Every structure is written in structure tokens, then in C-alpha cells.
Length: 465
Length: 78
Image 1 (cartoon, each protein chain N blue to C red):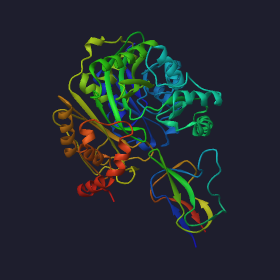
Image 2: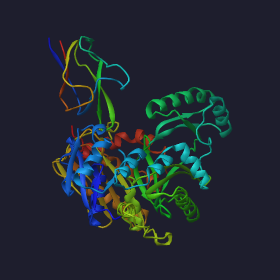
Image 3: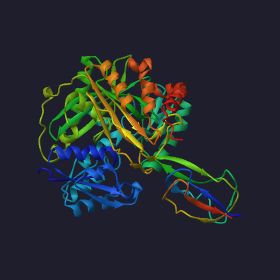
Image 4: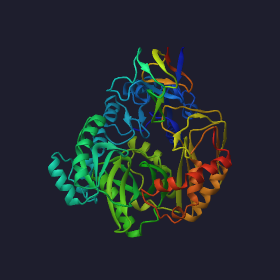
């Protein structure tokens, strides 16, 4: 049944993005908000807004009962969870359906299956997707685990089955540190996630992070090509592109196809992302996890394919079959996204909430700025620091890099420290220019270049102090 | 002499290092300059709040897990 009124169970820039997609489809929108978000951009542009609780996320954006009540009170027939918050909570997805509403995403069952990182690994292997050498699912016996780790070859990663977003990961360099860390990781996972299950994976040194966007309708699945997100700080992506220049056409085809195969094997429904590590030296790719929601960096895929991924996921949730076959999904040119966070890159990325006292938004050919800002907006301290994403598109990577430089010159966010200066500095780095990077590249580069960033911020008057 | 310890940053104030542990300080406890009296969570990162004076805690002005503004009084030392 087509969705008539969509409740957006999120905030910030992704809430704005979802409202835009819904409005384009002629669907009415309800924006929930906490006490701290009554004036946010998504509230201003939605058809209706409803307060669901205090600033703390646990009492508002994570409060299932309050969200379901808001949907009932406003007559919404569907809920879009965005990313973060309840977007990968299978119990929430099921509660939404049990309340007679549509959850814009896969079933709670699929979310739970792919959310259990060890089970997802087993499922990937079953679907013929290469996985990082490691344990078959969760390991219980520590002696067995230690001998398995030695067989795989150190260093190995010890991961929490219930973890995610880089949390609950430890690296053991040798057998001795493995025996020390494995029980620690298990009890930590128990405390953090209520599940002490751990599994082991080989560390792929100097790997790239490459992920594949998929769309599926419960029976068929297609891929929308890959993104590379190797520039990460503390396992958080800061810069994403599509396509990846590291892949040759044959590897790209195999990798992207494997993601669609995995989605099909679980009867996936909606938009999702299958994440891989890619080893330049061997040309091998390895499944790491699947995210069962829209991702922050989805716009780079939209820029090269011309798709509106959020609109497609809403259509699928409303019961439409996939509107495309694989051959319809062409990729054109190159796109780059950078994340503008309210953080001070010259001061160890200290969060920087405050008021937006001035704002110049870059426009022109090939530039898109997905954000939550307006002049006078007070950025609250209670949620994550993402203010917006600057996205560019060019006929090739070189053109996209030039456009990013141009757009960063035009962009001005006053009143806060943001990560803008980081990207201006990164654009000048040779390794970034040639995309000779891996997931451990950025942190040492930051240590070596913090003075450059600091000087640039002082020159531009970017320090709020 | 009365001394007020204020939050240096806006966010959510916590009196405990983690939900399972006891509070850093209780009313009646002695506090020395530099002691951690609580945490403020700002944009998903945690920052320790250190006392900038000495004394004995006479009152908490903010409850555990409550929103605070920068400069808001967290506790009073007597």
C-alpha cells in the first residue's frame, strides 16, 4: 500500500533529506523532535512536527513508545528511521509493524540477522561472498580460539558479535596478547551490548574500505556500484567517493555483484550497504559487515547514478517492486563527499556546539550541500556533530577534486569550528590527489599536519575563540 | 567560603563514571582542586569536569543525566 503520511524518526541533516524525498513523491511528512530540536530545519520544512520528549536521545529519539504514539496521534502510516538511533534495531522495526505501520527498511528479522556480525559473516560465506579469514561465527572456547588465531596468523582482530561502528574491537599482535585481550573483549561486549559473543578476523594491513550500495524489494536485488571511504579517523569516515579508483573493471563487477547476491540470499528489502576491505596488493576483497539502512555517504552514489536512493527505499516500503534491472544502473563521472562536523580539527576534534552566525552555501555546477543549517541556528550539544555534507560531481576524479576545492572556497560557516579546514589541507596532500590511501592513512597524516590545519584556521579566522 | 563548580561546556551532566558505578562525589565529601566531580557528554564524547576549588560538597545543583548549559553551576562547595 503506498505510503500517504511518513513520520521521520530522526533529526539533523538526514531528517531534512528524508522529508525532501517524501515531498518529491507527494507524501505528507511528520517530523518528531526533542525539546532541544524544536527549531531545527527538518521541523521547519515538514508538514507537521510533534514533540516526543526531553533532549537526551534515550528519552526522545530512542524512545520507541513515544515514537509509536506520535505516529498514532498524527495519523502517519509509515516510519523512516534515517541512520543511527533506532535505524538498525530489529525490535523497533518489528514494533512498528506490530502497530500496523510500515517500517521503511528491511524486516526486523533481517536487521537482527545482519546486525549480528558473526551471523552475517556466516551468511556472507553461504552466499559465496569472500570473508576475512577468521572464525566460523562466535568462538566460545578460549583455548580453541587461541589456536585458531595462531592458524590464521597474527595480528588478528577480536570483535564483538553484537558490536558495530568500530566499537568493541581489539587487535592482538601475538598469542600472548590474544590470551589477555580475548576474555577482556568478551566481558566488555557483555557489559556494552548484553552479549559476550566474540569472533576473530585476520587484520588486513593497509586495506581500503570499499562498500556497495544495494536496492532490493524482498525478491530481487541490484547493486548501485561502490563507494570508497578509506579516509577515516577513529574508524569514522570523513571523506567518501564513488567510484573507487582502486578497482579494475573485472574486480568491480565481481565485488558489486557479490553484494547483490548477499542481499538476495536474505530476501532483503529496501536500501542497504555491504562493506568490504580491499587489499591493493592481492586484489582480494573481503566482506566485513552489512548496514541495513541508508548511509550518511549515500549522495555520492546518487551523483554518479542519478538515482534518488531515499525515494526508492520509500517506494519499496510502500509495496512497489524494484523499478530497475541491473543493466539500468549506469555510473557516470566521479563524486566526492566530505563531512562537515562541528569539531575543532586543530584541537583534537573537540566537539563545538554553538550558534551559526553566518552561512554561505556553495552552489553552481556539480555541487550539492546536504545540511541542517540556517543563519541563527543553535547547534545543540546532545547529538552527533555532523552539520552537513558537501558533495561534488565531475566528469572524472580530477574534475571532482577541483570542484571540491572551489566549493570549499565558497563555503563559509561562522560561529563554530568545523572540519572544513581539514578538507582544504587534505586536498593538497599528494596521496589524496592520487588516492594512494588506506584506512590507517589519515590518523598519522593528521598528527604530522595539525600545525598546517591550525595555521589555516587562524588565517581564515575560523577559530571561534 | 562558598565556591561554585560550573560546567565548562554544554551537554549532558553525569555524576557517575558509568551507570553501574557510584557517583564521583556525594554531598558531604571533601573535594580538592583538580578532582573529577562528573562528566559532561557533548556530541557523543565525554569530558571530565574537574573542581577548580577546594571544599566540601554542600549541594548538587544539577541532577544526574540532566542537560546543562556552558557556565551552569553543577555543585556548590562550602
